[in-house]
Amino acid sequence: MIVIRPVEHDDIDGLYKLAKKVGPGMTTFPPDIDVLTQKVVASNKAFNPDASVDDENAFLMVLVDDKTNAIMGTAGIYSNIGKEVPFYSFKILSRDKHSYKLNSKVSSKTLHLVNEYTGDTEVGTLILDPDYRGGGYGKLLSKCRYLLIAQFRELFGARLIAELRGWSDESAISPFWESVGKHFFQGMKYEHADYLSATTNNQFIADLMPEYPIYIDLLPEEAQNVIGKPHRVGEPALNMLFKEGFHYEDYVDIFDAGPTVHAYVENIETVRKSQEKVIVSCQETGGESFDELDFEAVDCLVCNTLIEDYRVVQTQVKFTQNGKAVLAPAALESLLVKECEQVRVYPLNR
Image (cartoon, rainbow, N blue to C red; front, side):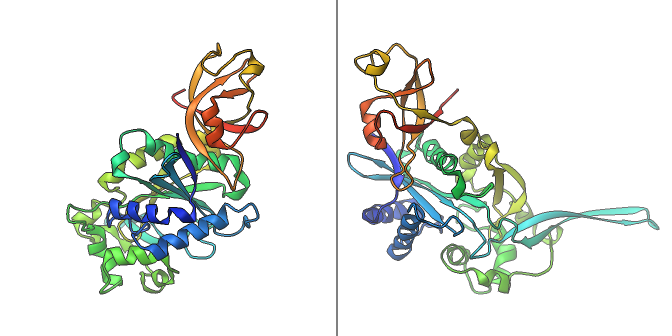
């Protein structure tokens, strides 16, 4: 069965192979054993029941075939962003000036360096092995994060955010970086600046980025046109975020101007529509096996309630008249649960 679980130390080789496959555009997930090891260590700390809810905790999950343990993708959650390391964005603001003497009004838009997401929770590191695209696994990876947040609400902020990679051309050239970023980080390539931002203390951003607003109208047209525009490969992810309840409100990445979207947890569709259910056995409902039960089978995402051994599977669930859940033995085994325990259930396509 396909399972999502917390990353483990033994996954490092598989993570490295995945990082090499997805290419250089994913600067937050580089093919670097040391960086990947740090991510595993941080995730193990985050999934520890004794982890402090006030820390910047970095949860990393992997999508695996539980028979072969092959890593098919990853999904991450980062709580309390901006508390230890500033989380910078550009905020687009409109400015209007009016000359009464000339009866002339001028409207312009400006970029302001801000740090307005402190204490929020970021969802990210959504990576799917290209060999598994088209099978619904991207949706599974995306939603497993919201099930974790719904189940362990106290570990996460009131608001969620997601950063999307900005638009670049076929040669991986970002018009926004070429027009803005490289002038403040002289001699530094976009990939290196983004890598440093993701893997080190990013005080260098505050040190080098402009303190004053940048007038968008003064930028080259090709740079203006990509502000708030996602990379073509990120468009499906952005659409999933919108369907989940996220909104774009004029925040963009400081390096490539990709859109940053946000939503309050209570407005997230998976959070709102998932429920805890008690598991009952087939025999308790009058059947010999799952297949023989005379209840409608509903395709669902199901997670357990164990933070250290968190598991998510997509499986069919049958609901009894009193609202309890019946799962097939294979699903119970993959979820590390048994009868009379609880799971969280999110019905798909309902």
